[in-house]
Length: 374
Image (cartoon, rainbow, N blue to C red; front, side, top):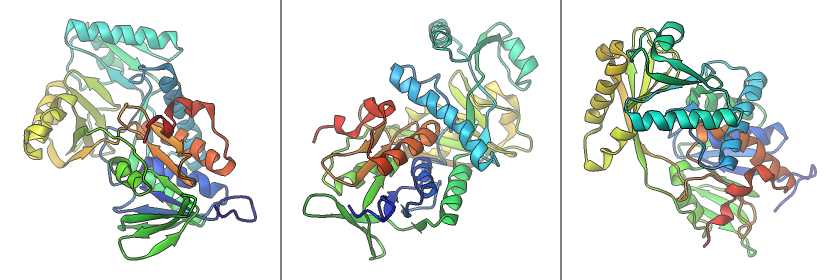
């Protein structure tokens, strides 16, 4: 690896400019590293723009280390907003969840109690209190218990990525958007040396950060690295509204709803995702999403679908992030996670620090890439 006079790598290629790639690249440029952003599309317009974009740890209780990582990133979001300004990307208004059958309601209450034990802020409200205090447009039973997670948020991912990339470019970063990575050249010792692009050009680099989302396994293969990924597609639809009737993300029975700015709402449902592989047309999936949403927010029944996208989620095979160096390939790092929206700030900070210092932060101990054997 070439090291500049400052003791830093001379050039870092960040492959994939969603929330993770943009966060890593921005953090590196803040420390004077020369970064080149590479993406076959445009920044923030892949899965970052087509996720539910919900910043949370309440859905991350499968392990304590994973929960703690997500909590750390929630805290990092507040620092990020103070540093770059909240602009049009940061909406810390909490999150609501309720159920409509006894088993799901029991699980919701058990999870809320566990999170309270872990010092995670949650209030249990009734449906009537939610309508009176928070979301008057909802239809839900008066006595149904609703978990209100006060510190959760939603993020406009494309706006945040654009902001981070603009700041990085102003600090000297380069970019090649609309250009795919075709090959990664290595030295005799197996370390990263070059990146070949679809336009025929070749870049000399010292480090590659694989933040390619659903394409991360392919990029890993270019350095003979095995990164197993799940096939788990999801459908998200945006509907236009003259007046957005909700103020925060929510998990209602059978449907997830959140605002998406001044004139749009985003809809998602795991139940509708299950229909993707049956061959249903995306327009039909969008219709089903809107029908479910209308039962919770009647005003959405008259809204119009503007865009719908089916995309594969970037989930490593065991469901957890893959972040950090791969010792067998000097100069190659991974930043691959399904919870990219939540984890963007903390992964950006920790991975940039690892690249700069060579030191591994214990926070990422359970999420190292080498857990996947060749």
